[in-house]
Image (cartoon, one colour):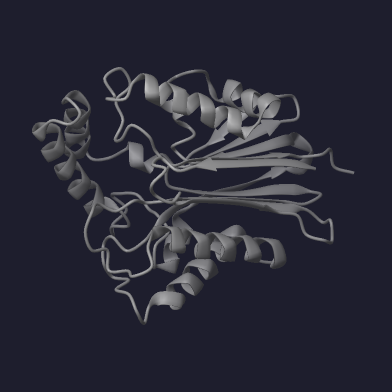
Amino acid sequence: MRFDVAGEPGDPARPNEDYAAVALPASGAGGALVLLDGVTPPAGDDGCQHGVPWFTGRLGSRLLQLATTQRDLCLTDCLTEAIASTAADHQTDCDLSHPRTPQATVIAARWGEQAVEHLVLSDSVLLLESASGEVLPLLDTRLDRLPRQVARIREQVRALPAGSAEHAAARRAYVREVEALRNAPGGQGFYTAAADPTVATKAVTGHTPRADLRGLLALTDGASRWTETFRLGDWASLLSLVRKEGSEALLTQVRAAESADPDGAAFPRGKCHDDATAAFVDLPAPR
């Protein structure tokens, strides 16, 4: 089995808040992939003394351990336990009720001889490559279905010149509106893994017969910009690039596209560079 993981921070002066890892158990019974994209809070207090990289490292490694060793648990239950365990690690020192408490998107996949199980929470992407070469994107699209007034503010942000006072004010308003919808009760917003274990039940989940797949590719939204923002190719083209040239080649092309449009004039986005991580697994044919 071949796997290929690459990640880069959006700002070299800051740590990468993404997490990605692949585990292959010694038993040879299968494996697991986990990818997280930490949510960068606006400057200011988030109620936690540890920070987002600490959170994604703890949550990601715990989820990978559970997915690998507790194969009787579904991925939803693994994520539930991983969130609860991570919260317990800092609940005595940090305010986990703070709306900006560290949180992350989640991708998880686990494979055995018979099936591949998947879990997607928030706006990271999991691509399934079929045995015939077709590519299916698995997406949690709730962040794209924001209420009309929030979508209107987002369009204002994109239309205003980057670096202007008007752009900064519109972006602050947009952040406030989005924060109010994140993990909000009533099902009107979207969900990320933070301190509430029950959010795991909101993830997009499913199974695919193992014989139907030959590859998996998980992407944080900084890496999926190749398709979603810069439109350099469709999902199948993106996966083909990674299969042929590696995850690092994908990130190199994303960085080149970002640098060619530093102010977001041609391709509007929240920030010029974002943390970007890709994790590819080339699944061997089942026995």
